[in-house]
Length: 232
Image (tube, rainbow, N blue to C red; front, side, top):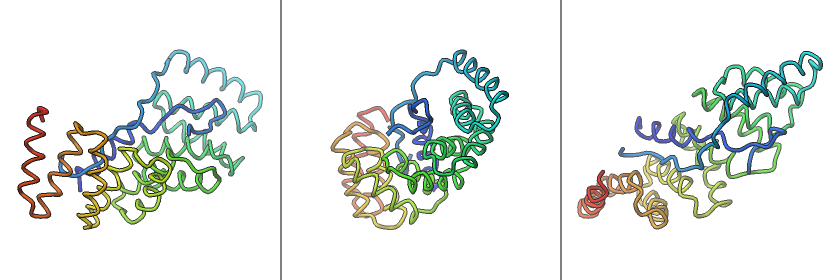
């Protein structure tokens, strides 16, 4: 269980994807490999300058939710998550149906390991629409980190419908099925993921352990031997 939470945390390490200027989101044994796209490199100096500019603008227009949303996004980029949450809460209070504010605040909560709040914000963002693989996958990941595998299932499967061959989504669903005791179904997801990422050590380890739980020592040993060849 602990390994699963650690591995999903790796997925959430990449939770802050490229976001448009208006704050809209861009579209060892058991675990979920973190294979989402890396966050683009941040120019910290330029971002801090932007924060200063927005701070001055907020002094002139203290009721402009767009300014708080933009500054909150900048705070997320530089890792100041408490400040980001504060700004984005102001923005959300002023405009409760702005998907971008909710999505970015969800990112800030997730990066702060406040997974319950992140799960709720991603859910609110999805209700506002439109749906996105990004929001669905990260909501499912937060549910797993809360050990609520039932809650992870629906957004995880919806994410897979949008990206049927997405390795992180397949791995997450395989892990959810495994933790729920559905070992054969878990193997289906792991096999599909491995067919597209055959040298993924985390996936091979997941499948090997699942084979072991099923009593298939021969198949488990095969995967462990592959891991040795890969240097793991």
